Amino acid sequence: AADAIRVTLRATGGVVGHLVCTFDRRQPWAGEELGLLAQLAPQLAMGLANGLLMLETRALAAYQARVLDQTAVLLDSLDASGRVVTWNRASERLLGIASEQARGQRFGLEVARAKDVDHWREMWATLLADGVMAREIVLLDAEDREVPFHLEGRVLREGSEVKGAVLVGLDLRIRRALEKQVLQSQKMAAVGLLAAGIAHEINNPLSGVVGYSKLLLERNLEPGIREKVERIAQSGERCRKIVEGVLLFSRSQQGGVRTEIDLAQLVDRVVRVGEYQWKMHNVRILREPEILPQPLRFMADADQIEQVLLNLLSNAVDAMPRGGTVRIALAPAPGADGGDAVSFAVSDEGMGIPEEIRDSIFDPFFSTKEIGKGTGLGLSISYGIVRDHGGDILLESQPGRGTTFRVILPRDGKPEPRLAPQTDHSS
Image 1 (tube, rainbow, N blue to C red):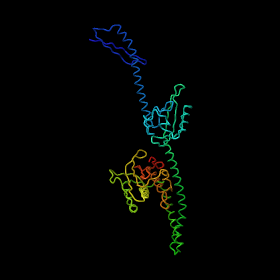
Image 2: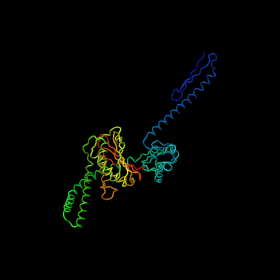
Image 3: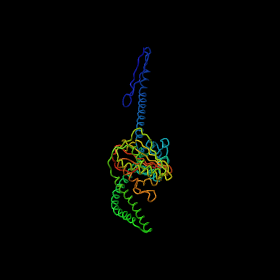
């Protein structure tokens, strides 16, 4: 038979546990053993309390680390010399640098290197002197690509001694892109109004120039005079096409009647319409996939979407003077608002679009073609139509490896506030 002694272990804050000791009834504990147990109990209680506190501290630290990792902004801590102590997941994602690589490196100099090192040194000095800092700075990621940040810092102190600092960085690329889109939208709207007014004013006298020149050509004119009149007629016709394009551009800012459209049928119809033109340029048009698992239907103005596709196909053909293959890829896609959308991508095998002009290709009257071969309004008109349908145009281009224009259109066809077309600068 056995008996037991239970000792309650108490520490600051209350009971932390119990100590249970068993003994044989035939050999009961002596007073000395009980005294030893009484002396041991407080030490066990303190050790157990410290162990529990350490577990709680570790759990809290792990929780805080998870919270920091879930933030979408750069949130890092540095020691007093500017070396990285903690590096959250957003920093890894935004700069492409793992935390293992970043820890122990000097921020702004060895990791997250500043494009302007002197500017970073000035920011760090301000932070140490004033305790706070908020500036914009361009940092370089793992591949030396520029990433603009709004960077704020707070000094960590113990008494009067600086122990380090915390940095919070907001990626400015999204904000700057939105600002750029708003400016582009305002510019396009203003140009549309101006273009419509000018085009109407020019159209009437221009019709007279073209009409009278054609009447003159019906007469028996001297060869020299006939040649000049023919030039007048040709130039007038070209101007009239430009005016028609301007009017079309201004009308593209307005929506038309929208019906349900089968995307594959629309693409096939446009390809058939231009079949002769494609063959003349030794260009083959392929639709991918040939058979869709299910129809891609959406609400839109069919005439306007056909015009967008025709403009993109014409540009793709012009980009391949020696011929080649243009691919039209159809697919479902997520919309800008998270809803359902459809997309078609037109890809050519041309020389690509140079980086320095990508931001201008959607501007009215911007063209890389020879004089007389284009009005520079095709992409502007396409942009206006797509945005009026609540969609997006995405550009992907690599020098020497072709260009892809991807059009995304929401299935419901509801218009959204107009933003600027998107270009991929990573290639």
